[in-house]
Length: 423
Image 1 (cartoon, rainbow, N blue to C red):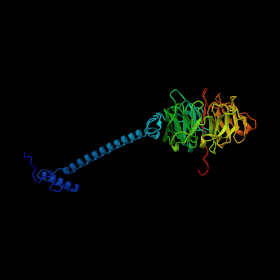
Image 2: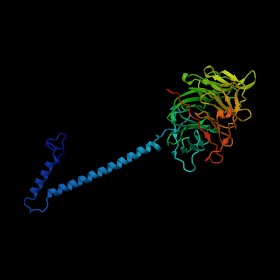
Image 3: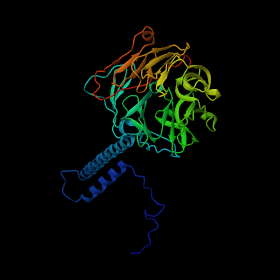
Image 4: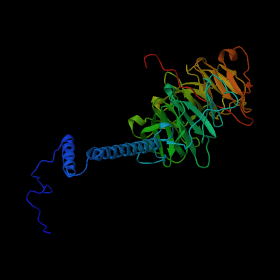
């Protein structure tokens, strides 16, 4: 056979006769061909052309059904793959936080999603309570938080977006968890941090990372816009005053303010500051200072804009130097420990007005928006301190909480400050 095709062959690059033939024309041509083949044969009972066409249509339908089935399988596989990529509960999988990671910081979801608890009823209080790995909210919700444990402090996030939980110090450092509102799983935001401080609204976090102190904003469980500054050994963040970070130096080195939004390094330290309790609405910091002339500790209001210089000092209350305590949202009251290891309620609006306020603080204190302070005593009882009752001479006592297992000490979750109208 010759390897050269005839000029009129349809297999050439440019066919010479049209190929666009309709289905009706093909059917008529087939019937005509078959009728010519059987023109001399006996009459047929069946229609050969119809048989061929019916077989062809059945084969076409089978091919169409097979194609649809394959398409359905492919759709299921793609959908399943997308669901697996979405992660548990719709949370996207993000990389585990490595302190000092130059690519930024993101929360890492724990492998098991939080599930509603069954069993004893939830612990009810005016504020949320954390008992082991169980969160009991003031609204009656009970959630198990897998992977969370040894929590020392807990903070609500503004606008009820979730919670920030800080572990106690261990040989490996501290852990910070983000617990989203709803049913999302807890996520590790920081691990192996030397120290962690959380702002009162839960929107900012500062921590010690190797040779640096780092601060970042918190948005939807993500650490954003981190700022970093080199710091001498032992220097750690202890709190916030607005957007600025309070930095404590080791020993009697005092406390300074890091205005991270302005860049640069922390300001000069006030060596007389021994402890910081919180901030008043006017921006002044409530702290404990050493009075050089008297050689004793005094309560003071400090100005963060002037390197924590005292604007008022009161040496009447005998406060312990353990740093435990908190300021009420309206800035009038301070609940802290005295040197006799019991709680003391101090009226910051009046000089030397201090009142015994029940069992000593052994952990964090949280104020309600109604003006009462909650904390847990050494026996694990919940203590409620109401200034009006204390002023009337009543001594608060600890109350056992139903549903708390023996040996467990609840952690009171700090609420966020009330947002001013128009803010």
